[in-house]
Length: 117
Length: 117
DNA sequence: AGTCAACGCAACCATATGGTTGCGATTCAT
DNA sequence: ATGAATCGCAACCATATGGTTGCGTTGACT
Image (cartoon, rainbow over all chains, first blue to last red; front, side, top):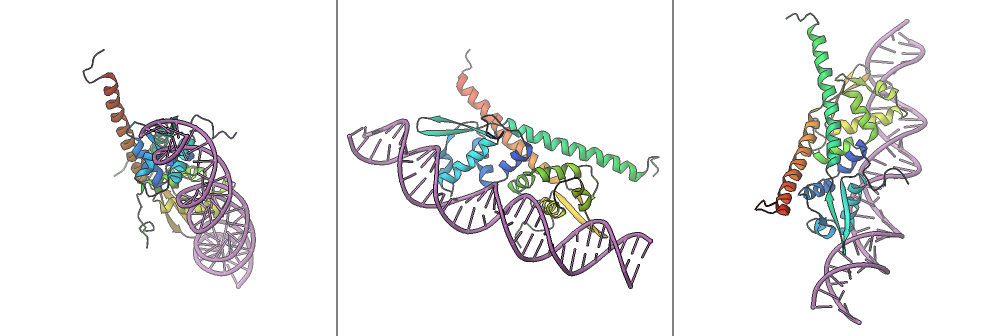
């Protein structure tokens, strides 16, 4: 078993970005952002794709931990698991913060440490 | 010319996520988050990949608008263009906000509109 | 002028990805 | 019990992706 197919999330940043790096999956995330759970049939109803294609995308999101699924009767219902989104955001924050302070230091260097005008 | 290969960024959210959905490219972004520009030789020095592989990854980041490059003498120097990161963040914020308020409404429904308890 | 460093281009290869279709199984409703 | 809805599995296909190597070009240094 590779560490990626456990039932709980694999909070690898690159994997999360990759899971979101697809128009269809991004659309699915948007649809699921209403907090409720939706069946596969429902989620694939308004798309030009086949049900199987949508199913695959949902499984990709699930493997990334962005979504969870349960079987209810004859349908599989998916709901958003928004915690990994925070993971992504914190990564972006780290990069941006590093960039900002680095830029600050560079600016100081350019303007001269003595601060002459 | 497809709208993706203009010199300025193509702020397609899915494309941005896809560009970041790779360990190597994420590492490159981290290295470039120091605000300076780095040559290809420098960026590929500490990696197990070939220079050409790193070059490709940099071009992917550039096509997504996350990075810009200029030719200086005999080397190509890349620097981070962090604006698209804000684009991504705003997308995540929208999804999270939608999820939060939807969850709030659902909770109200469950607890009852009259607020008994 | 000669040499080395850094790079771009192109060919090539293996695998991952995104899509389809067919089919069988389970579940719900009549 | 029959039938339709919903889904999972598997086969199959085309293309994208990530990687390598070889080679030619340009720029810097002596």
